[in-house]
Length: 231
Image (cartoon, rainbow, N blue to C red):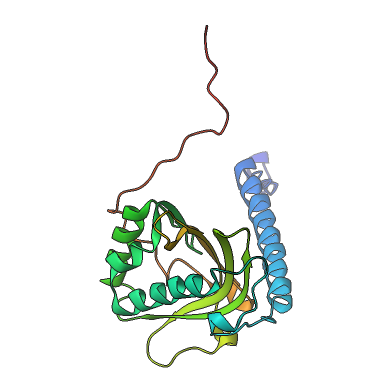
């Protein structure tokens, strides 16, 4: 038998190609993101279980016992009643007239209005679209007077269409600041709204969108620090 007739030696199995480093990095990042998501989700669930609505307030503004020199109690409540009525009529002009010229209004989804005109035109768009036909429900938590011309009102509130919501069903907490102006009328300079209770974690811009982007946007200063002056 010649050497050429001998069977060939079996080939050694090829070593597997090393995994690309990029794939390992992606997998590590994916695991990190998953763990972070689980951690945030757990925190939200914990907050959801501890954020039940306790103080529900009263729907009658005049039933609240104010603190401080409450000479303007009736007039402050009349302003807030007019605000609710203007919303129910879808009357953006009447709604905006209850704010001061330089008022600000921050909604619970982060939309920020600046100035009476911005508030009026923004709500004109809402009353003609997403919020058309809705009404406002309020449940007042407290009224504080600071002197004879400034009041802060906290309440729970929500919009509804059809049957009015009960105080415990209202999903937002509102803070109104009201000032008595030179003409004797009480108006609102700033207003802010935040989600309240366990429903706050379900609030999403997807079902309560901000005003359409075509409305004029107010641009604030880039910094609160004074600009250096050269002499």
